[in-house]
Image 1 (tube, rainbow, N blue to C red):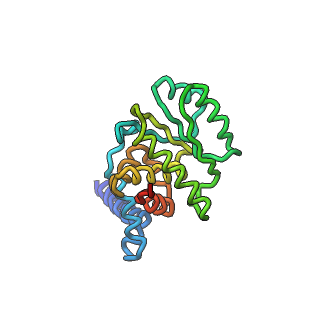
Image 2 (image 1 turned 60 degrees about the horizontal axis):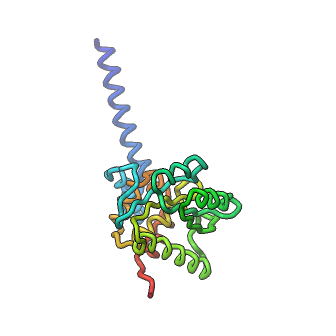
Image 3 (image 1 turned 45 degrees about the vertical axis):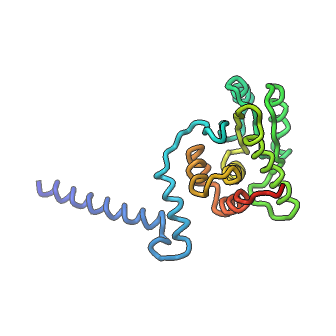
Length: 211
Protein backbone atom coordinates (compact mmCIF):
# COMPACT_ATOMS: atom_id res chain seq x y z
CA UNK A 1 0.00 0.00 0.00
CA UNK A 2 2.81 2.37 0.86
CA UNK A 3 4.58 1.67 -2.42
CA UNK A 4 1.37 2.27 -4.37
CA UNK A 5 0.58 5.58 -2.64
CA UNK A 6 4.18 6.67 -3.03
CA UNK A 7 4.05 5.90 -6.75
CA UNK A 8 0.78 7.82 -7.13
CA UNK A 9 2.27 10.82 -5.33
CA UNK A 10 5.23 10.81 -7.69
CA UNK A 11 2.91 10.64 -10.69
CA UNK A 12 0.87 13.57 -9.39
CA UNK A 13 4.00 15.67 -8.88
CA UNK A 14 5.26 14.82 -12.36
CA UNK A 15 1.90 15.75 -13.87
CA UNK A 16 1.88 19.12 -12.11
CA UNK A 17 5.44 19.84 -13.25
CA UNK A 18 4.59 18.88 -16.82
CA UNK A 19 1.60 21.23 -16.82
CA UNK A 20 3.69 24.11 -15.53
CA UNK A 21 6.39 23.49 -18.13
CA UNK A 22 3.82 23.31 -20.93
CA UNK A 23 2.46 26.70 -19.88
CA UNK A 24 5.94 28.18 -20.11
CA UNK A 25 6.51 26.66 -23.54
CA UNK A 26 3.17 27.85 -24.94
CA UNK A 27 3.55 31.42 -23.81
CA UNK A 28 6.98 32.12 -22.33
CA UNK A 29 6.80 35.85 -23.02
CA UNK A 30 3.79 36.26 -20.73
CA UNK A 31 6.04 35.44 -17.81
CA UNK A 32 8.89 37.58 -19.05
CA UNK A 33 6.67 40.61 -19.63
CA UNK A 34 8.00 41.19 -23.14
CA UNK A 35 6.21 42.87 -26.07
CA UNK A 36 5.36 39.46 -27.49
CA UNK A 37 3.10 38.67 -24.56
CA UNK A 38 0.05 40.33 -26.10
CA UNK A 39 0.52 38.40 -29.35
CA UNK A 40 0.80 35.14 -27.49
CA UNK A 41 -2.30 35.86 -25.46
CA UNK A 42 -4.21 36.60 -28.68
CA UNK A 43 -3.33 33.14 -29.96
CA UNK A 44 -4.47 31.53 -26.74
CA UNK A 45 -7.76 33.42 -26.82
CA UNK A 46 -8.78 31.57 -29.99
CA UNK A 47 -9.64 28.54 -27.85
CA UNK A 48 -12.61 30.44 -26.38
CA UNK A 49 -14.19 31.03 -29.77
CA UNK A 50 -16.97 28.75 -30.93
CA UNK A 51 -16.27 26.95 -34.19
CA UNK A 52 -19.06 26.36 -36.70
CA UNK A 53 -17.14 24.44 -39.41
CA UNK A 54 -19.92 25.60 -41.76
CA UNK A 55 -20.36 28.46 -44.23
CA UNK A 56 -20.89 31.75 -42.44
CA UNK A 57 -23.91 33.93 -43.16
CA UNK A 58 -22.59 37.45 -43.70
CA UNK A 59 -24.07 40.50 -45.44
CA UNK A 60 -27.01 38.46 -46.70
CA UNK A 61 -24.76 35.86 -48.32
CA UNK A 62 -22.57 32.92 -47.33
CA UNK A 63 -18.80 32.57 -47.07
CA UNK A 64 -16.67 29.45 -46.81
CA UNK A 65 -12.89 29.04 -46.98
CA UNK A 66 -10.53 26.12 -47.44
CA UNK A 67 -7.88 24.44 -49.53
CA UNK A 68 -7.66 24.01 -53.29
CA UNK A 69 -10.78 22.12 -54.42
CA UNK A 70 -10.63 19.07 -56.65
CA UNK A 71 -12.94 18.55 -59.62
CA UNK A 72 -15.54 16.62 -57.63
CA UNK A 73 -15.60 19.31 -54.94
CA UNK A 74 -16.19 22.00 -57.57
CA UNK A 75 -19.12 20.00 -58.93
CA UNK A 76 -20.48 19.76 -55.39
CA UNK A 77 -20.17 23.52 -54.97
CA UNK A 78 -22.27 24.02 -58.09
CA UNK A 79 -24.83 21.48 -56.90
CA UNK A 80 -25.04 23.23 -53.51
CA UNK A 81 -25.71 26.63 -55.07
CA UNK A 82 -22.36 28.36 -54.74
CA UNK A 83 -22.09 31.39 -56.99
CA UNK A 84 -18.40 32.38 -56.76
CA UNK A 85 -15.13 30.48 -56.37
CA UNK A 86 -12.21 32.73 -55.41
CA UNK A 87 -8.74 31.42 -56.24
CA UNK A 88 -5.60 32.94 -54.70
CA UNK A 89 -2.90 30.99 -56.54
CA UNK A 90 -0.31 31.62 -59.20
CA UNK A 91 -0.37 30.33 -62.79
CA UNK A 92 2.28 27.74 -61.93
CA UNK A 93 -0.16 26.23 -59.41
CA UNK A 94 -2.61 25.31 -62.20
CA UNK A 95 -4.98 28.09 -61.20
CA UNK A 96 -6.33 28.31 -64.74
CA UNK A 97 -7.45 24.70 -64.49
CA UNK A 98 -9.52 25.64 -61.46
CA UNK A 99 -11.01 28.56 -63.38
CA UNK A 100 -11.98 26.38 -66.33
CA UNK A 101 -13.70 23.83 -64.09
CA UNK A 102 -15.53 26.57 -62.19
CA UNK A 103 -16.86 28.18 -65.36
CA UNK A 104 -17.80 24.79 -66.83
CA UNK A 105 -20.03 24.37 -63.79
CA UNK A 106 -21.69 27.77 -64.35
CA UNK A 107 -20.15 29.61 -61.41
CA UNK A 108 -18.22 32.87 -61.41
CA UNK A 109 -14.46 32.58 -61.03
CA UNK A 110 -12.50 35.34 -59.29
CA UNK A 111 -8.72 35.06 -59.52
CA UNK A 112 -5.83 36.74 -57.76
CA UNK A 113 -2.66 35.38 -59.43
CA UNK A 114 -0.58 35.35 -56.25
CA UNK A 115 2.08 32.68 -55.85
CA UNK A 116 3.71 33.99 -52.66
CA UNK A 117 2.21 33.90 -49.20
CA UNK A 118 3.94 37.10 -48.11
CA UNK A 119 2.23 40.47 -47.78
CA UNK A 120 2.43 42.94 -50.72
CA UNK A 121 5.78 44.72 -50.77
CA UNK A 122 5.48 47.21 -53.63
CA UNK A 123 3.11 49.90 -54.86
CA UNK A 124 2.04 47.71 -57.77
CA UNK A 125 1.30 44.77 -55.48
CA UNK A 126 -0.66 47.08 -53.17
CA UNK A 127 -2.75 48.26 -56.11
CA UNK A 128 -3.47 44.70 -57.27
CA UNK A 129 -4.43 43.70 -53.73
CA UNK A 130 -6.76 46.70 -53.42
CA UNK A 131 -8.48 45.96 -56.74
CA UNK A 132 -8.95 42.33 -55.73
CA UNK A 133 -10.28 43.24 -52.29
CA UNK A 134 -12.69 45.76 -53.81
CA UNK A 135 -13.97 43.09 -56.18
CA UNK A 136 -14.54 40.68 -53.28
CA UNK A 137 -16.34 43.34 -51.27
CA UNK A 138 -18.71 44.15 -54.13
CA UNK A 139 -19.73 40.51 -54.38
CA UNK A 140 -21.35 40.88 -50.96
CA UNK A 141 -22.51 44.48 -51.20
CA UNK A 142 -23.67 44.83 -54.82
CA UNK A 143 -25.00 41.41 -55.83
CA UNK A 144 -28.67 41.21 -56.85
CA UNK A 145 -28.97 37.75 -55.32
CA UNK A 146 -27.40 36.41 -52.10
CA UNK A 147 -23.91 35.18 -53.02
CA UNK A 148 -22.36 31.93 -51.85
CA UNK A 149 -18.59 32.30 -51.96
CA UNK A 150 -15.69 29.87 -51.49
CA UNK A 151 -12.20 31.38 -51.02
CA UNK A 152 -9.12 29.19 -51.31
CA UNK A 153 -5.38 29.13 -51.97
CA UNK A 154 -3.33 25.92 -51.85
CA UNK A 155 -3.70 24.84 -48.22
CA UNK A 156 -6.25 27.46 -47.18
CA UNK A 157 -4.00 29.00 -44.54
CA UNK A 158 -1.78 32.00 -45.36
CA UNK A 159 -3.15 33.66 -48.49
CA UNK A 160 -6.70 32.62 -47.74
CA UNK A 161 -6.52 33.88 -44.16
CA UNK A 162 -4.91 37.16 -45.14
CA UNK A 163 -7.52 38.16 -47.70
CA UNK A 164 -10.49 36.71 -45.85
CA UNK A 165 -9.62 38.75 -42.77
CA UNK A 166 -9.16 41.88 -44.91
CA UNK A 167 -12.53 41.21 -46.54
CA UNK A 168 -14.27 40.89 -43.18
CA UNK A 169 -12.74 44.16 -42.02
CA UNK A 170 -13.74 45.86 -45.28
CA UNK A 171 -17.31 44.67 -44.79
CA UNK A 172 -17.40 46.57 -41.51
CA UNK A 173 -16.64 43.95 -38.88
CA UNK A 174 -14.39 44.99 -36.00
CA UNK A 175 -10.99 43.43 -35.41
CA UNK A 176 -12.36 41.19 -32.66
CA UNK A 177 -15.41 40.20 -34.70
CA UNK A 178 -13.23 39.38 -37.71
CA UNK A 179 -10.99 37.17 -35.57
CA UNK A 180 -14.00 35.28 -34.29
CA UNK A 181 -15.49 34.88 -37.75
CA UNK A 182 -12.19 33.68 -39.23
CA UNK A 183 -11.81 31.15 -36.44
CA UNK A 184 -15.37 29.96 -36.99
CA UNK A 185 -14.58 29.49 -40.68
CA UNK A 186 -11.32 27.65 -40.03
CA UNK A 187 -9.43 27.33 -36.73
CA UNK A 188 -6.33 26.17 -38.61
CA UNK A 189 -6.33 29.30 -40.75
CA UNK A 190 -6.93 31.64 -37.81
CA UNK A 191 -4.17 30.13 -35.71
CA UNK A 192 -1.54 29.76 -38.43
CA UNK A 193 -1.94 32.67 -40.86
CA UNK A 194 0.80 34.60 -39.03
CA UNK A 195 0.97 37.93 -37.23
CA UNK A 196 2.48 39.88 -40.15
CA UNK A 197 -0.38 38.86 -42.45
CA UNK A 198 -2.93 39.61 -39.75
CA UNK A 199 -1.56 43.13 -39.24
CA UNK A 200 -1.50 43.78 -43.00
CA UNK A 201 -5.03 42.47 -43.46
CA UNK A 202 -6.30 44.60 -40.59
CA UNK A 203 -4.66 47.78 -41.90
CA UNK A 204 -5.84 47.25 -45.47
CA UNK A 205 -9.27 45.98 -44.55
CA UNK A 206 -10.24 48.82 -42.25
CA UNK A 207 -9.47 51.41 -44.91
CA UNK A 208 -12.40 52.70 -46.91
CA UNK A 209 -11.36 53.24 -50.54
CA UNK A 210 -12.21 56.56 -52.15
CA UNK A 211 -15.11 56.43 -54.59
